[in-house]
Image (cartoon, rainbow, N blue to C red; front, top):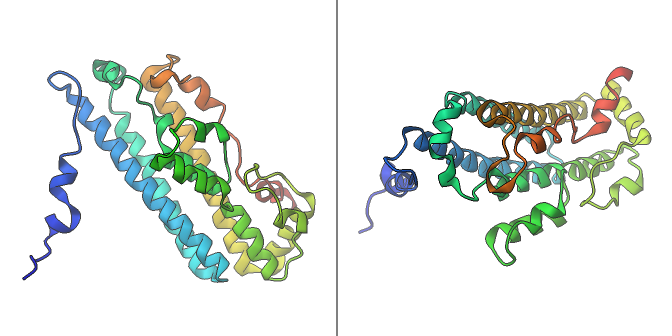
Length: 262
């Protein structure tokens, strides 16, 4: 007979609790917090990628209500990701310094799942792929996201199937390039807001998503500044100096450009 499934066996609790392995002597009290928070982030990134793939499938299947529902879930998770920074900020600079040197070359820049998330949303960088060794899981996942249509591309194709006159050049655009503003598309979006409440609702969820990502970036850079100031980041990164360059860069500029015309 097969063994009964229990809470512990289903969730692999023993294996999960064995994954937190501080490197500092003692170990330093706050290293466990640092590890747990970042492992939880990676689990949430996995879930967000799972949900964004679902949104793409629902848009491709012309199921706008399901797409909106799933986007709402993603937005709720984003709020949790931002809120976790409040916990991380309870660690003072001295407490972080007590184990920071043990991180060696480890850096958040090496989170392939966060890069995958950026790729899925439309912010792609070939340099981000090149940081990972060829043939590995991370490199393969990033390559797949690099070549795949972004959430914005899925949305444009949905608009076209709904009968909106999306310019053919946008439907055939290079999905590895950033989303560029389109005055022609902006006029279509204005019309959608005025006459198509169902699709306008999806537009608003995309604005929420864009704003949520910008909020995450702002809170992240302030957390880094609060913890290490202007020091370089681990792994040779520029730390807060680099993170500041990512602020105020909307994913979907057309949805922002039309706000004053509605």
